[in-house]
Length: 261
Ligand SMILES: NC(=O)C1=CN([C@@H]2O[C@H](COP(=O)(O)OP(=O)(O)OC[C@H]3O[C@@H](n4cnc5c(N)ncnc54)[C@H](OP(=O)(O)O)[C@@H]3O)[C@@H](O)[C@H]2O)C=CC1
Ligand SMILES: C[C@H](O)[C@@H]1OC(=O)[C@H](O)[C@@H]1O
Image (cartoon, rainbow, N blue to C red; front, side, top):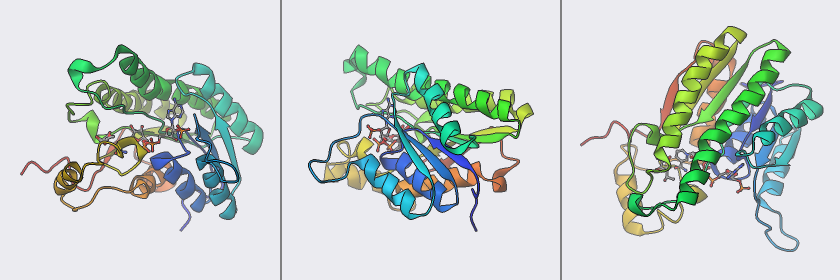
């Protein structure tokens, strides 16, 4: 069953990791997709970049796709994403506010610049893009769905993440308030809270076999998450199957959060 047939989805941070999986799974479920990314890497002469690859994958699924570079921490980026989606596809039905960074640092050593940048990309960026898309959805007059990528880190701490976990709690709170503010327009706002998902974001942190084994051991299902595990839940929350779900936060963590002992 295709859950997003005829829908138009914007995803931020869609060139890699969880955002990429959201873009591909949404397309598999029938959506046309506008993908935001920031600084894609040049893979070298004759080789495709990450954004080229995901665009190709979506085209192969028979869906329309547009890629737009932009820093979500810039308030103009949200406006540009909406304009581009409307120009290409005529409307916006779904936003996956996903872009995020997590430069690991011990609390006592966090450089001020990394603290500011993490706040600006993860929290301010989610705010700007959500507001721009919500204005467009309200003007369209037929509702919509916004799903933000929060984290299990909204609920628990991390010794190397004191500049990061507050942004994820903020994104969770942003979706709760938006659910209240936008519900009257038929715009549902929810978040997913991934546990530890193997992506570039934590590749360095999990490079040590001991840390990797420890993190896997903390998960009752016995493995780290894959980006598609999160993307499937975003598709569900964006779809009409979740038409009465508003202001919710869905843990996607293999049971990590509830595992005290
Ligand atoms: N991996 C995990 O275990 C977890 C991740 N999360 C959250 O999931 C989200 C995605 O993370 P993940 O897929 O792991 O990370 P990745 O590093 O794999 O991907 C991050 C994506 O965000 C984009 N991006 C980075 N900075 C910006 C910016 N300023 N503006 C626009 N796009 C930007 C990147 O673009 P480019 O490639 O061009 O740099 C890339 O597409 C984040 O919000 C993260 O906090 C939550 C819980 C767990
Ligand atoms: C990047 C981390 O491994 C990841 O990010 C999160 O939000 C999770 O809580 C993990 O700590």
